[in-house]
Length: 187
Image 1 (tube, rainbow, N blue to C red):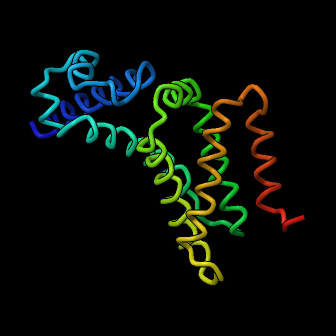
Image 2 (tube, rainbow, N blue to C red):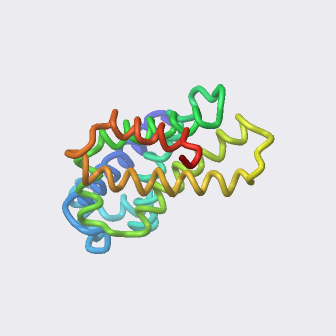
């Protein structure tokens, strides 16, 4: 019975998550109501509240799932020969994710110029970079927290920019630019 309950919980959370993502593609987060989410997911309002306290809680859950996916991809093999290799790997994973989810991300950005959204993306990449730096290196002159914030800011900003400029540069070109920036010594 416990396994059956777990499946129902997973199914309901998946329906609500998918409904949230679909609604975010159509309109601004601030304009989405609990009833919109429930109607889209075909879930009763009381069921929603059994799983989430409000739409912010659901939103956080949805993007924790995204963050966990990026995090799992980036930490699957953390035996990097250099810090530069680590940065490039994370950039590659992030740009793969952007390419795979371009339509959704484009609509999210179009309808939601929201700092909460950027915060979730930022946190997911920063967490991965910080974790990997802690595992990869132990003798950095700059504190890991500062390094992870620095590179995260660049990756998030560039990733959001690329969502709107995919027609100008391919993923391969973007990764080549990133590799050049990572290896550049100020030349």
